[in-house]
Image (cartoon, rainbow, N blue to C red; front, side, top):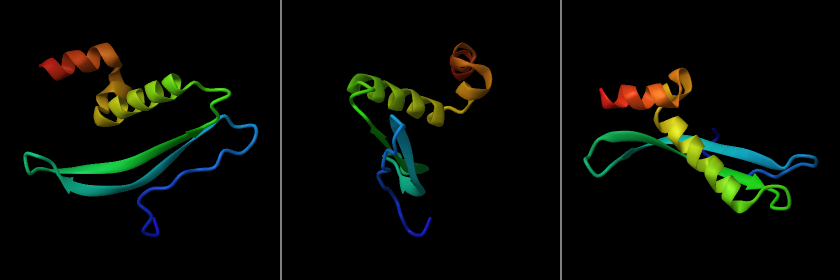
Length: 84
């Protein structure tokens, strides 16, 4: 939006974290196929959230965004569907 590809959000009290989502952009991966990438930034108060918890949250968010069936049918069924 407005040509902004990424940004960092500011935490307002009493929030402990806020997720900033940048715009989607089309890139070519190593196999020369188009894929859409986006930038996500998590700003958090480290007095309330540990760095490991923030990293785990972003890792789970990445998995969910890369495999939308994870949200619809659950993790076990999504893994089963991926194998078939």
